[in-house]
Image (cartoon, rainbow, N blue to C red):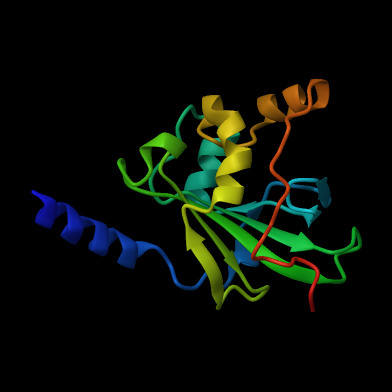
Length: 163
């Protein structure tokens, strides 16, 4: 049984992308950059078709294959794109405690992934929005305006503002 699990884990890890090029060609959820304390940057949010459909219909659970791209900018005018943070919904059982989301951080082009998998910093924020499948939905954003979450702001291995 362990052997089958290892084979399944290996095959699924191959499905997790090593490149996220072309992210900017996806649907843009944000009309303007958002000042994100958690990312220590200004962000925009782009989604692939599966994530867009789930977000717009306020789905309780995102489908496997849903991908969210968050480009991180140093400035509100978007002159300095520093990183792209990615969330991808994986198969049931990938990370049950955290909604089966895979996280990655890539260079601005999306062709070089710096870190990926179960990233503690990402999980530390998204755990607060379990009720919307770990996504900061419209209803969650309204709550955030009322109450502030205490977020783990340490980004130990990713200096966001180095050029």
